[in-house]
Structure formats: structure tokens, C-alpha cells
Length: 225
Image (cartoon, rainbow, N blue to C red; front, side):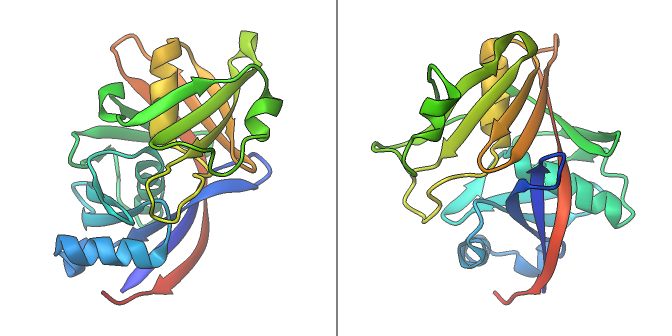
């Protein structure tokens, strides 16, 4: 089957972006164990399976198992579905309906912060302290390390460390953690994560957060279950 490999949340110069695998024929990999094995074989932090392109039904897997919600897989899937001629106005992962739209070449989704769980936010005094962290830092559990680059304008420096024992030592760009940070700070952010990724967020009065980024195609791989 075809696996579309994308980079999600690229910087304005095309750098950075978190690698994502998108299996457009999700029903061909219906078994949960097969999905986990395929995701583990690809080795990306997440892989998304499109189960119904017209309705936007998707399923997200890490190398160790499913996630009800994840940011960069949904941004990437929405972008790819539009490239393939689908509206992708709403994506439907297990967590719930996720509206999506595009503006000025950027793909947006809207989600609830309560869906983004299991990541600890830790603030550091300077971007240099975030940059100096080993990959991964000592300890257990998902860590999102961040500092202000420019607090008045909402610019943030961040790095993400899954620390879940699946070989992903650092996440290049993490939409769910950006969602959590935006909700915690109650303000719009521009997050510079990893080597060169950029995540834009918008804190909304309805208790939701809008999340956006640019997407770039990498290749189409052939894979077997």
C-alpha cells in the first residue's frame, strides 16, 4: 500500500517539520495490531490511517499504539486530503470532530485542550536553557520544555521529548503540546520547536484552540502489513 510521507509544521523557509506517515487506504489495514506494527516499522512519532476520506474518519498511531487525538497527524491529513480533492472540512479521530480549513497556505485545525493529555509542560528561563537540554533529558514521561523568546509578541522556543521507550527521543513538532501550552497561557502563540519547525496557535473564547502550520510532501513509500 502507499504511505504518503509529509513534513508537518515546516518553517517559512521550508526547514523543519515533523515527519508523518499517512496511509490513505486505512481499511486495508483494519487490524489494530497491524496498524501498530506498520507505525512501528515506519518509525515516525505518529502515523495516521484514513478510514473514510469523504467523511474525514482517521485513526492515529504511535509506534506503540493508538492515540485518540494528535495535532500534527490531523494537520497533515487535512492538507493531504485537500491535495487529493476532498473537502476535509471536518476530521473525525476517536476524540471527536475536528474542524479544519486553510488560510494563506497554512492548514488549520480546531480542537479541545482536554484531548491533549499526558504531556508535562516545563518552563525554562531562556531559550538557551531549552537548547542545552540533552535529547532526551533524564526522567520519565512526556516532557514539553519551553521558554519565552519574546513574551510580548507570544513567541516561544520549545522542544518535545516523548520518553516512552519507542525510539523517538525527540519530537520535532508537537501539535498536542502546543494546544496544551496555549490553553495554559490563554493567549495566541508562535512556537519555534525542534530544528526549524513553526507552530501557530490561537486561543479561542469558546474553550477551544486553533492550531496551524505548513505542510510539505517528502515521498510516497510502498509498505506491507
